[in-house]
Image (cartoon, rainbow, N blue to C red; front, side, top):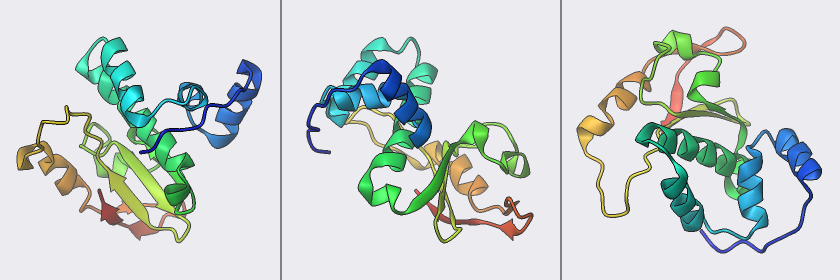
Length: 153
C-alpha cells in the first residue's frame, strides 16, 4: 500500500464520516495522519494486549480497508465482521475461521480469513482447514435463498 496524504478533520466530522462509511473512526484517524498500512500494523502490534486483541483489530482494519479502498469499494456493497454476519448461525455460529464476509453488488458472497502474522511467517494448511471447510457450506441470505460463497480469500 502506498503512503496516504495527510488531511485535517475534526473529531465530530470524523465520527460522522466513519458512521456514514460504516468503518472504525480510528481507521480514519490513521489515514488522516498519513499512516501507511505497515505503520498502522506496527501501532497495532505495540498497543495490542493479546494475540486475540491484535486479531480483532486487524479484522476491523481489513473491514475498513475493503469498505474504503477504491478497488474494493466499487466491488462490495457490504462487509461484515463474522459476528455481525446475517447467516453465521447457518454456518455454525462460533469461530469458524471466517473473519469477514463481503457481499458484491452482484449479490455474491465472499468469505475472508484475516491473518496478522509477522512478515517472515508462513500459513500452513492446518491454519486454514476450518475456514476452507466452513466456506464450502451453504447458507440462507437475506431473502431466505440458499446460497454459498462465490469466493474465498
